[in-house]
Length: 295
Image (cartoon, rainbow, N blue to C red; front, side, top):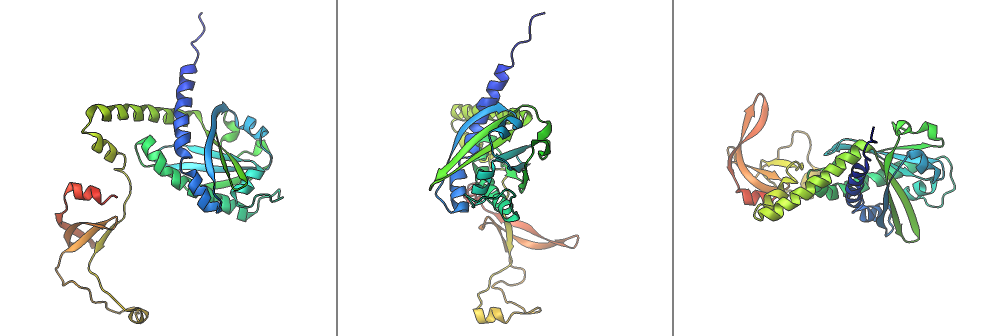
């Protein structure tokens, strides 16, 4: 019986897709870390390799910090950011500290910094995934023994490791982010779809704008209905109490305005449906004007 063909093409596809993912994931990390840690930092992706979590931990000094990064929208799966003791303290804004047990303030600082990094990366991943990407609030785990790994890490065999380094102002922070095989294949397929979509935009020419607008169709925007406006002096505001009446610059029955992203896009009238207030639209701006409200 002839041997089975090697699985190299699949591995190459995943590696190629993860290179683009890693670049997008850490694209805005430098400004985010600069703001969070109050130090000028630049972030670069070092490499993307196939390994195991246990092999990774052999390179890092304990206790190890594991930051759980779960997708809330756009993709499905979980990353783990893995940090050595030194890098964990640096990310917590306390480089050089000689502590073994991470204090609650260190964990909270790491949680805040990583959440800001993920918020910044969401915009970069939008172009790669062709959909809005959001993360759940991260959780931080610290452990000294590899048999006490959080989540399902102890059962995972091979994973992809994305290594990145933040450098600046005399500080270096090495970060490693895990990608399991299932999530790696999903990300690789996103890269292929993005390439096909890009070729389609070039061929169609005039369809470029609709292709771009499709990328943000599921982005959430705030919607507000304005019943009227009033201008008050500070002394009058301080006198407000329950039961106070504020006169608005509109009469009963006048149309109300509908704002999206602080831009007026429609007018309507107030209605009551099943004891809930609503707005029946009576006029709306053109499609091109509505697109401009997204800016």
